[in-house]
Image (cartoon, rainbow, N blue to C red; front, side, top):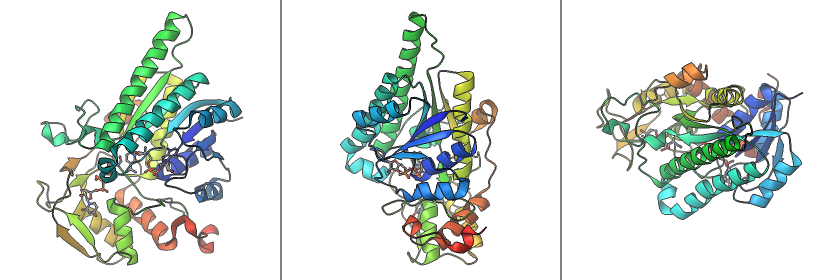
Length: 366
Ligand code: NAD
Ligand code: WQD
């Protein structure tokens, strides 16, 4: 018997596919809904290759309430949702804000409505460190604790803050309603997981990030420099107040991030805390130059780069204080930056076309 059944929205995407793997490995059944806007069904094959189990999949858009209703009706055993599905490109969010609000905020409301109709009352939500904006604006807030004032600086970040608010108001209202009616109210719970900079791939080399478009995050771009697809990395500014002048981020291995979701889900189901926010980060900050050095080391040669102007909207330091998650969720990152770089390189080197090609036979034999 399964521990429980979880609906994972965005489950064929990068973080969703790794979390699905962690859920299946830990006795949960998983039902995925994904529009495949930024992913492919091949992720399901890789999940199955690694853990021997295949999640149930529906190509459904989270803005389609009837589609979601249909999935919940077919799976009355679903008791929790992990909600990843979203548009996530910071730059694009400033160009087409209405689409970001429609999909991210509107889609989350549609999901919550459908969940309520089917009495599904636990939600784990993919929020982001981006909700804090520039935490260096407030003295004493680096590393960033959860009570750091919110202050997003872009449309994508605004959608994350809005969804956090919608989830909080909704869960609290359902609790009040149930309490007033003399019904069990503790079943309504939400986890707002604020991730820092997810990176890395599966150590097998057969599962990793495979977006449909062009990557804009540091490590995937370094991967493209290493394979020769790009001639150099552009370093966005070396005049920050850090030890080497480049900006600081808290890079977290996607396997650790996935286990953080499992820990949060288990916490909601056991402790029934209402709505809580947790930072998921390592607590260790690394500069862009340190990342270039770490990745160059696993590749075995120096990777070319060129320092250019700062990127608009970038901040000096986004390092997590993960103490709350360490303590309450009994969760800590286990993998290092070196692990993330080595795993990413194994993935990139062996799968130049991502999921659009079969995984190399020699990796499957291992
Ligand atoms: P991803 O793009 O790989 O995964 C998102 C998935 O959602 C994709 O499979 C996409 O096809 C799907 N999707 C998009 N719109 C949809 C819709 N309307 N209906 C159904 N499915 C839809 O991104 P990811 O990196 O795995 O991010 C997952 C979540 O984590 C997102 O909510 C993102 O905002 C959040 N997050 C990501 C990062 C990061 O750096 N990757 C950091 C913090 C938070
Ligand atoms: C990391 C560092 C860049 C590319 C973004 C979102 C955030 C979250 C994670 C979703 C920065 C530098 C990068 C390059 C560079 N996503 N860099 N050259 O901006 O910290 O966070 O992804 O929630 O919301 O904003 O990540 O990987 O783009 O950049 O010098 O070509 O690398 O300036 O210091 P970022 P990133």
